[in-house]
Image: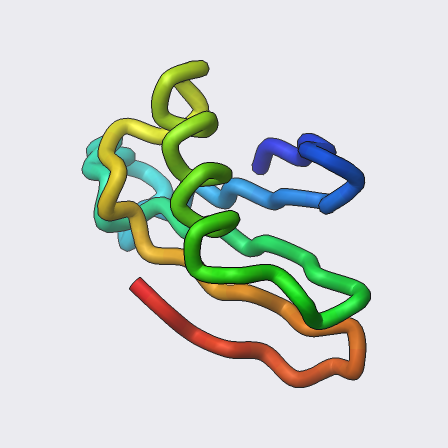
Length: 79
């Protein structure tokens, strides 16, 4: 798992393989969790975060699944 902070938002990148003894490195096994304590992140900001993660090598593909975790404990699952 990678944990970075981008513009004050904690971002978790989890690299999960279905079989830990045989990691494939397949991008669909990765998950991005964007923690939004104020609950006001826009779709455009999510796109910018994912573009940054891709350009810096944290994720392999821009369509890596993500979830926005709101400050009130509610989460909004997206792709």
